[in-house]
Image 1 (cartoon, rainbow, N blue to C red):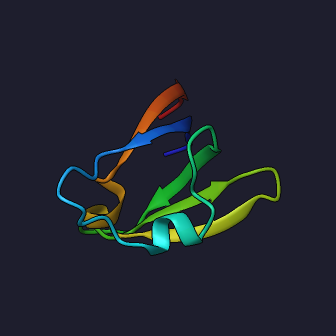
Image 2: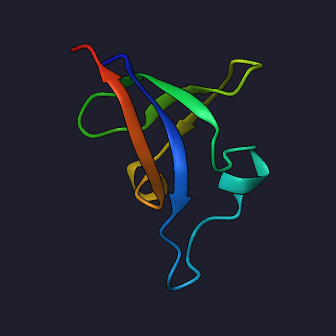
Length: 74
């Protein structure tokens, strides 16, 4: 997949965003790279930040994150 971008904001109008998104350090201006997605619409495996932390985000969680795509190499 190898999509790179940065977090711009969050879509949290109804205050339903999982708190773990912020607790993991996924904050505005954080650069990230989507490494791959598990089969059958499974989690996205994301590397982010200067420390190159890695996390699996379910699609339902990722939908709250507004991003700016920096490049896309499929």
